Image (cartoon, rainbow, N blue to C red):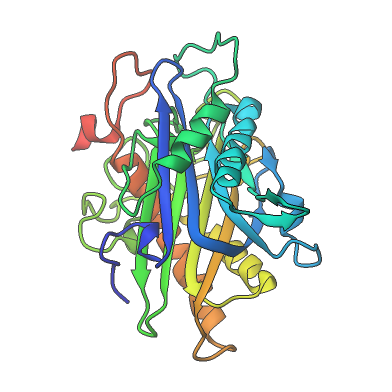
Amino acid sequence: MRVGARNLITDVPGLRVGNAEDTRVRSGVSVLVGERAFTAAVSVMGGAPGTRETDLLAPDKVVQEVEAICLSGGSVYGLDACGGVVDGLRRMGRGYAVHGLHVPVVPGAIIFDLINGGAKDWDINPYPALGRRALEQAAEVFDLGTAGAGYGATTANWKGGLGSASAVLDSGATVGALVAVNALGSVTVGDGPEFWAAPWELGDEFGARGVARTYPATHEPRPGKVLREATTIAIVATDARLTQAQAQRMATAAQDGMARAIVPSHTPFDGDLVFAVSTGTRPMANPDTDPFTLGHVAATVLARAIARGVFAARTLPGDRQPTWASQHG
């Protein structure tokens, strides 16, 4: 296994990501879109999720493919970002053809970033426009850290951010992850520089600080943020050809990566969830063992992406939390 050429989810051929931010609101949107519709599934393990169209992603539902997935700040207001993406895709002629109309299906999820210091006194909800702008800016290369859906994100002790990572398996299949890190827990061991995801780091992608010398096995964590203002939302993607049920299993396995990178994770006050995407362009060499490997790699790639999101966060005027880089960079 090796890192993909960009170390981004867009190393999966055919995928692009667009980011859009509102600096006054201190929030943003990220959109994953493909050259064509793709198979998608979702696993929800947090106690406070905020989602749109996720019921359609169950394997027994009629919709088997979607046009894009939207990750947004803004809590319930941010769910409207999906509408902006839908409008943009319709103008592109994307979506199910129904009686001369195009109906794009765009699932989405949100993080809570409403009390991060930004101005939330809008008269018109800014998120539909942000969603459409993010779609229009979709490209193979995009910013990490203080960008897109991670623009206003926070964690227990550091600024959060938008993270991504990738891996190319020995079989030739590619796995990538995209994540907005806004966790109630911490991505580092205490306030030190070592990331919980350190055992999975490839090269120096988030500082190469290694594993912490001491492990706080007896520590009883307390919430580091106001309750119900946290969530980590992610997408894992592959070019391996998966059914919707297999994609859901990959999303479930990828939740292990969230638990490896954030302590604690999946709390009653986080809306932690993982979407899984399959572009289906590469047949599996072994339908029995390949899903096993894909689940493991999806977890490790997501753990790396989470660390990279916090590692890349930038300091801005008015920040209510320090960045990891300002203390340890």
